[in-house]
Every structure is written in C-alpha cells, then in structure tokens.
View (cartoon, rainbow, N blue to C red):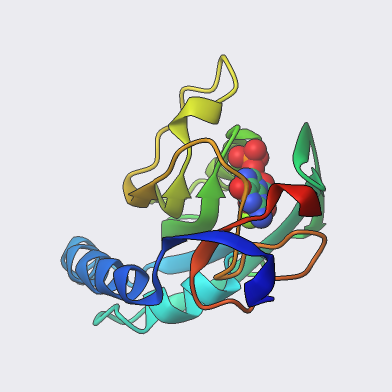
Length: 178
Ligand code: 5GP
Ligand code: MG
C-alpha cells in the first residue's frame, strides 16, 4: 500500500492530536446532552472509533449508510442503504463524516435527519475540501478536523475502490493509479 502513496498529507500523529482537541471541544458542547453520534458509513469508521473515545460525556452510537459515490467522481444522487435505527426526535444529533467534498452526501444526510425533528443537529467532519463544494450547497460543517486542497485522498477510512482504508494516515495516491 505504502508504495502507492505519492505524499502523506496528514500524518497519524497530526490526526490524533487534532481529534484530541476536537474531543475537548465536543465534550464541553455536549455536556448533559447525551448526544446521538451518527456516523456516515463506510468512510467514517476509523475516524468515528477514534473520535468517540475522546468524548468524555455519555453518548449513543448510530450509523447511516448511503451510496452514490463511485471511483473519483460523485454523481450527486443518493440512496439510503441503511437508515439510523434510533428515534431521533428530541435528541441532540452529532453527524460524523470522513470528508465534506461536493457536499451532496452531507446535505442529503443532514436534511434526512432534520426531518426526524432532532433537538439539535451538528456536523463534524475530519476533512473539508471547500473548493469542491457544489454551487447551491450552503450547508457548513460546525467542526472541521482539517481543510485540505482539491486532491483525491485515501487512508484513515477513505478508500479508492475499497482499498487503502486501513492506512493510518491521509495520503495522496500516485496519479498513475487512478
Ligand atoms: P460529497 O458528497 O461531499 O461529494 O462526497 C462525500 C463522499 O465522497 C465522502 O464521504 C467520500 O466517501 C467520498 N469522497 C469525496 N472526496 C474524496 C476523496 O478525496 N477521497 C476519497 N477516498 N473519497 C472521497
Ligand atoms: Mg463518507
């Protein structure tokens, strides 16, 4: 796997340090709120597992699985493969996502969950590529781990054709590989 990486964009240590910082902020924000932490599968699993272990408040876990994304291009149309199983009405929902790219996925998830009448709903994304946002998407992430330039990244949960998710850092693939 290592040989396929052109550049390590965010090291394992940088990721872990940032998650520890976010953990402090989120633990204060959700004090006494028993948040429902909703992860967007599958890319979020690595970030999710590290992030919730930095929350010092009681929280519950749930997941949504949506699809649309193939290869390096996002079509924008979304299908729910798995919806949340908890009753969201009146709950404080924290959405965790791996990357905020064109915004189609998060926009879809956010509005889908909003219809279920949560008490509050916030977004925390590990990575944000603001330069890629689709026109018309005004949604903002409340918490961002790292802003990154417009490059296709893999690792730390992010895949290319399902591979590289288990790299412990975020890196850029060699261009000849995709
Ligand atoms: P969006 O709907 O914001 O365009 O894209 C969100 C989803 O597309 C992410 O959850 C992720 O699965 C995928 N994606 C977007 N950018 C990248 C990238 O740079 N690398 C990888 N591996 N996946 C990406
Ligand atoms: Mg994702």
